[in-house]
Image (cartoon, rainbow, N blue to C red):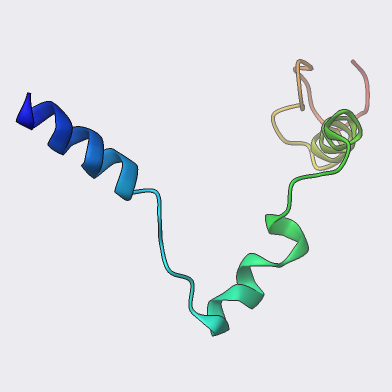
Length: 68
């Protein structure tokens, strides 16, 4: 029983971290924020990946021609 309590305390306390004042600027950068509309961000990422000739985006499998 004690071991279970210790494991639970270890897991609960591991999620907290101190952020120094000079690190807050990096964490507050726009790239670190969640998009306000995930559907729009998903579509924009899809278009970006097609344009950059990468893996093809979300569900599309192709190059950079824009063809799905």
